[in-house]
Length: 470
Image 1 (cartoon, helix red, strand yellow):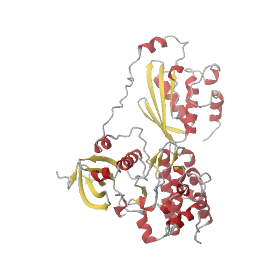
Image 2: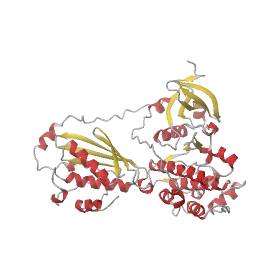
Image 3: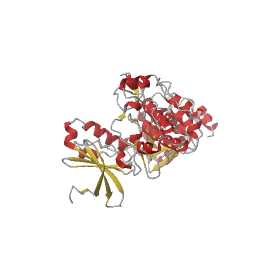
Image 4: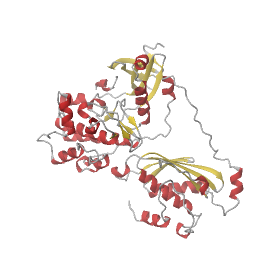
């Protein structure tokens, strides 16, 4: 099996994209007949030009993102001289190609593309990923005309609120705060680029354009643009709120989604996947990295620890304090439960229902996501997981972890769960001793559980050349 025609289970075909350091080939998976796009990178040229970190970052980021409007990466294969990135094949080409022959889109198509772009960007931001190079060239279209965001080579992976400093992106789409050579918010910068794209889709030309780079930057920093006469008041208003030179005043994604013009025929993305454990073994192997074994010892589900069996004999002892774990990033918490494992799981499900989260259960592990009935603004992208470890017949440890989404929902869930875990089997919460402590994660304010529960009860609800090869 020659490398020229095959790599692993993939049979290579024609070249569909080419750049300085890489080329993209169409290929077919010989096991299932699925078409894929394989980006072939010259490893030595990447090393010589100090681009290893950039390539690794792109691969790691794409592996982290599983969204219907983002190009998927299937696997990475490495040889002594080449790195093969096996990606989803998107047959419709770049959005920029479509713009080159239709000039401007009609309102319905422009809105659909913008809605899908915002959905994808919102998902990225929920996972701590900031693209930083959004433009029509990096937006591919599938056979049904759906947007697929690609090329994460300039992306940044940060915690919400972290300030970025590297000025990057394409001149016409870059936010004004990046030109000031100061720290900036990655989310606000991406939103600005989305606004430029929306303007271009509706107008057929860029809001900021000039052959002289300095003149272009002056226009951007002053937001000097003029909407064409065919723009509706709703379109003009939305774009003006996005293209605000002050990132603190600039409209957020949540506010964009609630905009009346945006909401027309809006269908939120479905088929979104979350995976807390991203497998990077193939990435490590491709770059000849030494893998570290981070395997952690786990307590067997069916085994009891003798020390806990002994303590459990005394019904007057409260073990919850032994399991409280505080995290500075407010992303993890651990609780003690004086209930059986089945009762504890039911209380987790009840706490999730309290904050409008649906539960996907697999044995003692659970994943929680927003219910469909929630508004798009409220739901955002949220990923919360829970695991119950049984240490005695009526004593469990509950480990909570949040890897994406708003902190407020996480706090509400932890507070609700704390209250429910206080209850004794068969005894309503209101009959509990009010002096008993409630275990909360760091910075979650202690609240009277009965009041919290009452409050909850009151609520109702490119041609394929679009693949970057540089």
